[in-house]
Amino acid sequence: MRKRLLSVLTALALVGAIAPAAAQDTGADALANLAWQVGPTNGKIADKASIRVPEGYAFLDAASTRKLNEILHNPPTGTDEYTLAPKDMNWFSFFHYSDIGYVKDEESLDADAILDSIREGTEEGNEERRKRGWETMKIEGWSFKPQYDKSTHNLEWAVLASSEGSTEKFANYNTRLLGRHGVTEVILVADQTDLDGAIGQFKQLVPGYSFNDGEKYSEFKPGDHVAEFGLAALITGGAAAVASKKGVFAAIGLFLVKAWKLVLVGFVAIGAAIGKLFGRNKDKPKDDAQE
Image 1 (cartoon, rainbow, N blue to C red):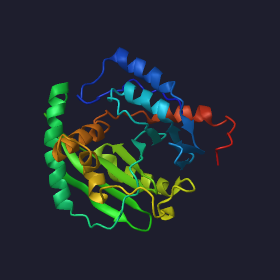
Image 2 (cartoon, rainbow, N blue to C red):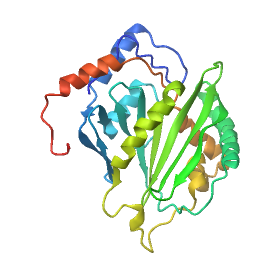
Image 3 (cartoon, one colour):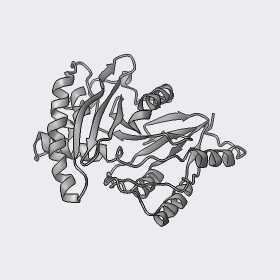
Image 4 (spheres, helix red, strand yellow):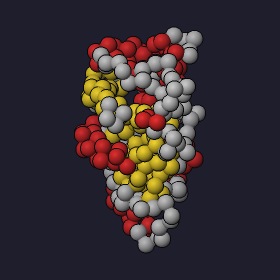
């Protein structure tokens, strides 16, 4: 899936500005040269898990995802991320494995209290945004309230937000996939108008995600490292606050600066170009990882 994003790769990045035509061409060339792994194949995530990439989707490893973030003007996260997206690029999903230990799933989730924490954390995060010259953000509410599935050990939610000087609202959909020694964090980025459809497509892919043997949540053994926080902290970024001297809301704010930067990337109509890329890869021989 080496793509060429038409004449409009608007790297909105965090400021919402449309890139000039020359920069668009450069971005298109750079995106076309990323090492997209076109489905059907398997995407490996941090040597801890894998996800089936069906036909019509493509995957980027950590090195290529770093390049993708650079192209889109996203600041570096300092962690390995992996990308999974459909060929029309209506949405992107970013995977990151966090080696934080076994998270107990015994607590109930108070959606109102969690949203209050996110709002306060966002205000702290806005201070950092102002320092960097980025637009500030406002939390509008839940687009999808936190929900945990004990049978699959998956936590999901979506927060609705807006940016300074714009009436347009946007959301990211988050999933946390709990494992024995850590958690895989997933952020799905889509335009608000396409979010429901994107979530539906993504949920069809989740059953194809699997922790490696010995890493599954059900394989927990006494003596394994247990995280110092529960489900709510996975939503607010409070995990960082546990070990932070900055204070709870400052840590939440920094967490949200990182989380929301992916949402503010500009999305454009690049489906036709991506479709051509998939067509070019159709006749390539499948490797041993493909299904």
